[in-house]
Image 1 (cartoon, helix red, strand yellow):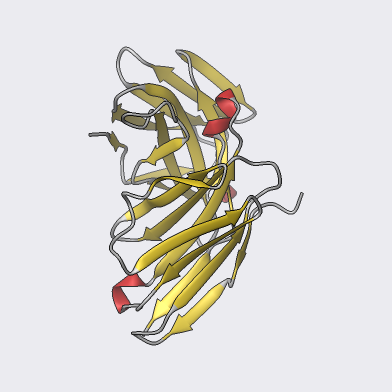
Image 2 (cartoon, rainbow over the protein chains, first blue to last red):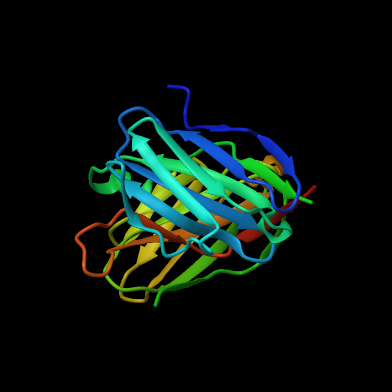
Length: 116
Length: 115
C-alpha cells in the first residue's frame, strides 16, 4: 500500500486566500484524522471521521476551517480566508477500527503551509 | 479533561539506555501508544500498551502501569538515528459516545543522541 497520501506537500499563499489540503487514507481504514503541528502548540487534533462521518470537530480553530470526507478514499481540509497564524504543518492520518489497531495511526507526509 | 506530561528534552550518548516517561490524566483509558517523529518527517507508530507490563520490540520497549497512570519508553543501545521527538498518546472514549478512535498526544520529548 502507498500509505496515506497528502497533497500538496508545500503550499505558500497570501493572507486572505483560500487553501485546500487533500488526503487519501489507506484503503480499508475506517478512521481519518486531521492534525496541525506547530512549535508552540505541538500536535493538535483538528477533526476526525469514522466511516466518512465527522465525529469530533472540537479542535477546529474557527469557522474559517472546514473539512469534508465525501467518500472513503478522499478528504479535504479547507481554510478560507487564510491568515498568517494558520502557518503550520498539517498532517492527515488514518487507522483501522478493530480493537488495538485503533492505537496505530498512519500519518501522511504532511503539508507545510505558509501564509504570508 | 485529559492531559499528558512528558519531559521536553532528553540527551544521551550513543550506546546508552534512555527512558522517556509519560504520565497521563484521562477518562475511559484504552491504551498508551508511542510515536517517533524525525525532524521534518511524519509521526510513526512505535508501540502500544493496553495492559500493565512491558512490551519489547527490538531495541525499544514500552511499559505501562494503569494504577499509576504512568508509562515509559525505553530505548537501548542508542544510535545517532534515534535522535528524534517521541510522543506518548492515550486513547479515550468520546463523551456521550461509544467511539474510541481518538488519540490525545503529549507535547513530545526531543531526544538528542551525542557521539
